[in-house]
Length: 481
Image (cartoon, rainbow, N blue to C red; front, side, top):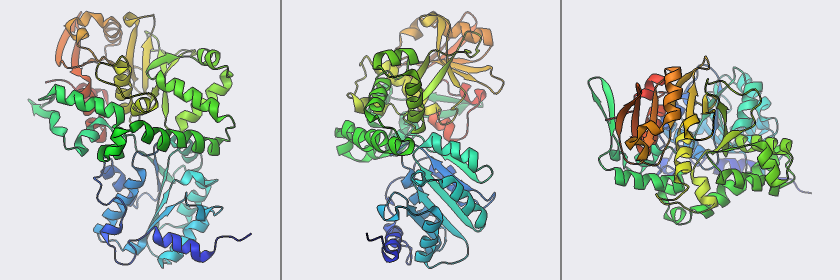
């Protein structure tokens, strides 16, 4: 049986690096696409030589990781780095099958014509190489003059291996699905939200809540993926694009190959059920009873789905903000609300599913910033004993709480937020509630409740997080003109 020749391998590497030689900017893929807001922070890490670490870019499929790599290459060339010192390797290419990371690296260096000096090496979709973390660590240790950057779609698995094998050698960078802030900015519609300063305090308002909400509904349906913003065919049929290019590839290809899953139908059925119930409380017992699948198997599948950045599990706390010793129930959130619309059908502003999709959208803005600190509170059935989002600080005390609604009814009768008021008064923490269109502030039983439209809230979350604002004090500044 014939094997791939060295000539073919070197040829493939050269074709993937068309900027070698003349450094022509137009030869760099995606050079015409606008950069995401996360490009700036990522580029600083990608070019930093101190400390000497590899950068591990993680995130779900189709959120723009590869584009981010090519935008970094473009910026390097623009800033005067020799194009032949910048190497890109797409590990998924069949021609590289069976090669180790070290072999790929050596072949790429040979193809570039550079045998020494400072280099930038970008490995795309590194999780498909066995023991990649061991080999990447070895490359970092062996080549102090080379900056290594790697991307991967199995976020949790990559991070686990990064922690285990790359301590002091890897720096993780998470790229989330498109935030609502980025969505409006890329469409040049960010004038729909105004952030101003008055008397030293930041104020937020919108000149046209109807138009903002119209864009917010579009964001929920397909806006989590950058490609959907610029290609009409994706917007016309988001279900086909997202389901076939993202969900199916993860469920049918990524997870089975990474974890050796045999019954793909079971996994697919579980994910479909969880997606339909995004923002709802579920339990292993109920899932097992409804599916006929053992609880331990379901638990393992949920871990796999989390590792692929498809879902996120949020755990419950009680009235005293204490975690349950034996948690029998939890909430499941899609990391991107667009996936629900793709699996079932697009929603309208008055759809019954809007409340849960809005809550999912709020969580999706927060997940990459505070992945382990978000919880929900429940101590009795109904709104009187529930809070949608509770953030615990490092001492496991409530830092703030939010109740998410796609309705103005609660602003008119704020006392209906009984659970939120009771919880925040007990813990002396700030709270907030979202609405559909109304922005105001009410005081109930000594507890101040700022109300802000859900679309505005999601926008400002993205705005704050990209600027590194995650504390309770930053949170309280989200409100209110």
